[in-house]
Structure formats: C-alpha cells, structure tokens
Amino acid sequence: MQSKVTKMLIREEFNRERVEELIREARKHGPFHALSHDEREATRHEYLAHHAQGQDLWVFGYGSLLWNPAFHYVDCQPARLFGYRRRFCLQSSIGRGSKERPGLMLALDRGGSCNGRAFRIESKKIESETEILWMREMISGSYDAKMVRMKLPHKTVSGLTFVMNRHHPRYIDKLDMEATAKLLATGEGHLGTCREYLMNTIAHLEEMEVKDKYLHQLASKVQEIDDVS
Image: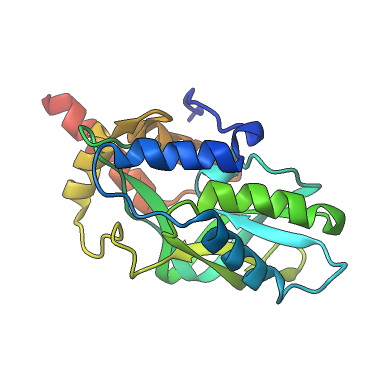
C-alpha cells in the first residue's frame, strides 16, 4: 500500500506567532481549549527536568510522526510500546477536521501495545527540538508528555511519548467502529483529510512490516462507506 499525498508539517511553521494564529483561527468557529505559551512551556520543562542531562532523547511516534516528525533526529528505529494502544479517540476541529467536517485523530490510549518508530534527538539539540515538538503536539493540551520504556530491535530504552489526556474535552471514550469510520470518511481540515491520515499511517507501518488490525478494519469500513455513497 503506497502512502497518500498529504500536506506536510514544516518545522519553520512551528513558532509562537504561528501557534497563536492557529488558536485564534480555531476559536472563530467555536470554543477551542488551548494551552498558553507559558503553560505549554511549563509542561516541557517539567518533563525535561526528569531527563538525564547529557543523554540523547528517544521519542516514540505512532501516527503522523511516522512520516512527518518535523524535528531533527539522528537515528530512527522500529519500536514497540507496552501499556498503550493506538486509537482514534481525539476529536479534531483543526488540522484534519473543521466545524463543518469534524474528524478524529489517533492517540495512545490505555491498554495493549503499539508498534511505531523511535526517533533519537542528540543531547545538544534537545532544547530546540523539543520546543518544536511541544508546539506540534501540545497546542491544546490533549496529550500528556510521559516517560515510557520502548523496545527497539536490539535493546530497550526509556524515552518520551505523548499519551491521551483523558480529562481533555476532546477525548472520546466510547465510539464504535462504524461511527469512527464515518468520521474518518468525512473529516477534513487545512492539513487534509482523516482518510489520508489513516492510509498514511497504515502505509508507513507496512513499510516496517507491521500490520495494525484495528487500522485495517477501519480502512475496510471507510471503503464500504465509499461503495454505498
């Protein structure tokens, strides 16, 4: 399965002014919970306070980070994370959703395990690259930055990932496969469609020889929706 063409996130767009512009734009269409710059930076500094100085930082990616991390890294390896699973449980009204065509995004929710990629940021660039990463992942506070253990092909390392904040207003706890597929079939925003996001995730996992049953089931249901419409 080949990757679908989609708008790429560019690291140069991740700056304070651009983030604040995105928040203002989102709020034109209704309530949008977002962290202030100071709140966002506080969560970053809180996480980094527990990271050993002088050590490189591993970051686990499970969705769009697989093909579009936007931060600089010096190594990338297949990785498996235990205790969390990939699930469409985050409502999206910007990016790949809008007020007219709301969508869903992947998040790491509790239970099971997840295959993805681990990216290694060298120690001297942790400050600059995590600043980019936090502006990418923590605009709304929908995730919690968490230190986790991830299994690489030849070793197990500790590192960073972003897990679902279950207290966030955009968290969707219970949504069956049919309802999930309907939102993926129709969701669209300025970054593209949820359908592209789903298919890109599948394609890049397949490049790693990983078949995610949950994602493939959703892709089949999205195709069934297309066949009926």
